Image (tube, rainbow, N blue to C red; front, side, top):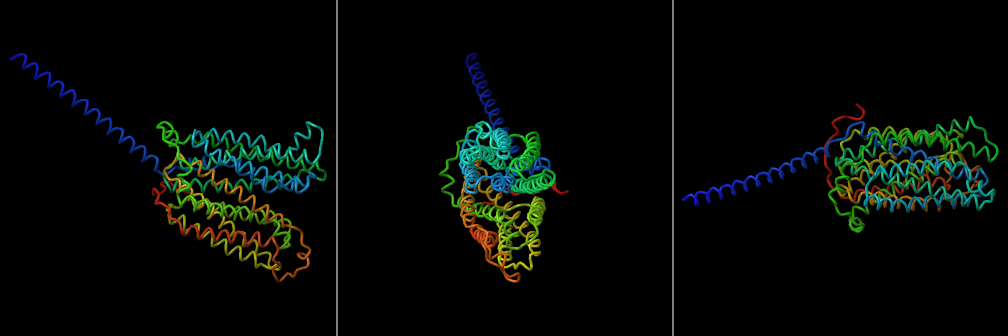
Length: 487
């Protein structure tokens, strides 16, 4: 009897111990589930004002140097005596290096993460090499020769290095959006803030250039180099200050860190290539960049050569465009974004560009003052299509965080290569036409500048609207902003 009693007690002990372990296991599972749900809820909460600001300023160095690159590089190289064909080679070397780096940077970021490390490394390359692009031919000084070939090689090398750093910074900064938050509205707000500071960077460059051109004298190639050297140094200083703000205020995205710890499998390229939405978003983004880049490149030629406006309009018209884009980009941050609103606002911006392009094509020289009114609507249209175009990329990526950098990198590759080819083709037919000086003031003269500024962007915008209407964007996580950014 005692042995039987002890046996029963032992069995009861084992059962109690098993139940206790089972309860603890279920409690741990439940606790992990609760923590996961709480973490997930924290990730879909809207971002605060400061978080958006810190992220938005992170691309300022890229933006201000990019504005200087596209606006003044060819002018600078030809002013110091480099043949136009060699100056085009320098520009092309940078664009090719940029396009190729975007793909490789995206792949490496997806594999290893560390967005801020890539951002900082790219920013250092941008700062060092950009000062050399506009600071004189370093190999020429070392060798003691000023031959056109050596100058072309020297400037091309630093142009390529600059664009490698630029691409690494761009891809890391853009792809970071999807790993900062899962909230779709906050993702579009981040893109909108980034676009707003792009406008600030462009306006800052024009202000710096205006002061330098009026304070620092020119007349000789050395004096011209001195002018652009000062523009480059001041631009690098301004942009670097904002890089420091970004680095101190923005943390390494938590979602990417968790994905690396849990060992998620990297998404292959074929996963994206098989998605119809990837090709649709890529085409829309490509057309959007063609609209903005081609119009910016030929705007000065149009207002000076075709419209015969004053030289100050070459700065005033772009300034109006960037100011209007900045204002609209800030206002767009207050909207609770859905897939339908992304498509709707892009359609509105695209159709507005079609109207602006028609006006540019038909505007006679006698009514050139209306170009200031058109520039207002161009700025509005640019902000609408750029903010929503980037927002579509975030919607495409969704929660597929281990492939987001490749998406942004591959789309940037298409952007750089296509825009480079388009500008090369258009500029190859660009020439000074004597008929422009003799054509009537009451009728439009259909020059290449009119087609490049009016027809090409309008057609690209219309095609972008058509592709957007065919998209089937997934419904994102909808959580409105708790704290208005303008409040």
